[in-house]
Amino acid sequence: MALVYDLHSHSTASDGLLSPRELVTRAKQFGVDVLALTDHDTVAGLPEARAAAGEMGIALLNGVEISATWNRRTVHIVGLGIDPTNAALLAGLAQLQTKRRERAEEMGRRLEAAGFANALAGAQRYGDGRNVTRTHFARYLVECGAAPTVGDVFHSYLRAGKPGYVKTEWAALADAVAWIHGAGGRAVVAHPGRYDFTGAMLRAFLADFVACGGDGIEVVYSRCSPDMLRNNASYARQFRLRASLGSDFHDPTVPWVELGRLPALPGDLPPIWN
Ligand code: AMP
Ligand code: MN
Ligand code: MN
Ligand code: MN
Image (cartoon, rainbow, N blue to C red):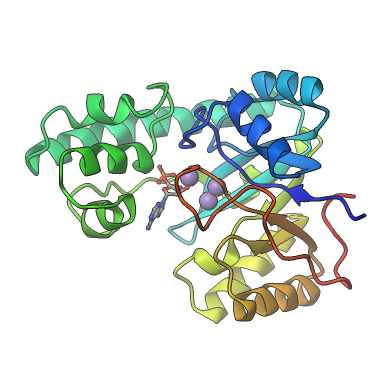
């Protein structure tokens, strides 16, 4: 039988709700054979995930999801098969973690001004307090009664033009790819259908990604419609990118996103990992 891959997932080292060990345990329960832990701008969860994966007999790929800025827009580049001790990668991630910290402080100030007391401390309670994402603020604002769901909080408070949004210049695309390659990994465009890009912008982005030496594109992910899957597959063919698939799992209480529960990649596409 074909192996079950899930090459995009999050733990409490970023905005996931399960610890690395809990995540690996759940992946095993759901029949995943090869899991990548890809936390936002950090590799801190990998040692615990590695230990759990060894005990449970599941293959783990060291991963990371790097926040990058292309044409003043945020994009996510997944690194797979990285050496998490690589000095240049760690230095790059440290820069991003500093930006995250500064952004979180500014978001906290703005959300306090919008009436949410102790917003930063509240957000920090939803994680280990070190690697604060917008998801952590969203969970705290749900707790405050700002909106019923995390998605609603993003819509009303955390996207561009809303009170809690702070524009951030993340890594340059070329740097993100270079850090991943320098650490021996493969660079993959995360969830191409989730950017608010026109088709022309997405093609320009993919052309720049290829020019930077990028390796792959996520063709299959959660809530990816058959139309989106077909589009992503044709981008993979057009730009000669290897195909990846990953759930982008964060939260076991969200029923429509589960580890390892994804449609198969189209058979003609070379997979990013085998
Ligand atoms: P950040 O990197 O801190 O800006 O946070 C980005 C994360 O927020 C993404 O990885 C998602 O997990 C989450 N996110 C972004 N948009 C939404 C949304 N509309 N609903 C729920 N979660 C979202
Ligand atoms: Mn996330
Ligand atoms: Mn992402
Ligand atoms: Mn992700």
